[in-house]
Image (cartoon, rainbow, N blue to C red; front, side):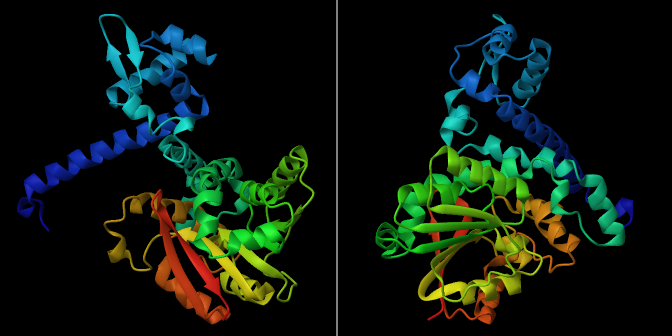
Length: 357
């Protein structure tokens, strides 16, 4: 369309929106810093304070804290009293920013923004040449993902997620074999192992760093009923062994997700349950337009979930593979019963309760 035929009001409105996006992107980065340095947690316990007082309480450099506060004030996150030179984090804002607010701490999720930025150059090359960025290129991924899992899965595991499966808590109390596929740093499986000492747990992940973290945590807690192994989950080498198999936010990252699902079907006991957590979304982009974090999830998918799969010449499903595609692949893997559940606290994920018969 020629410029002189352009809707000028619409163009100006969009330009303002883009400026807002720039500011929001900057605030996401600074919110990540506020989380990592503990500034939000410290400020939530302080009365209105000067930058010097805040820096001292947080054991941080005052000059950096002062500039960070500038971003927080102009971004409407922190309040500033110019007459007294003091800053205040309102409790209404702290409710979405501090560790004690789990599972509502959005600042923890802000860490994904700078993390994805570390691979931007390589992603641009992939746009030009194809391929992907390997898992090992994401420096802090396991640490950030562990916090994410801690909020969405671990915090709700005992009271909300396990009760989704009728009779599962009783089975775990009596003693069954459990496999966690893509266990990451093992927070979920270690919690289950601690809570159900009669059951036997095994965690598989391709990340040596994650497995080492899981093992270390298990040892520190004195857990003897859990094992962690670095394992290619396209080869589970088990036949109807496990009464429960879990996969928390792990299947869509796989290079060969169809093979993984078939292996899970083979390894699952005939009367067992495959409990799969994944992103709550549709396989069709037009059905995700009103998704509350659609842009974020497509971005994370492009810059991590999809690309790590493509780096291994995989399927590249991505985080937004959606419920329709998931159901199709589960059926092809040999599962006949699929029930989908949602939890009130978790708008980002859905929980698939899956059985072979």
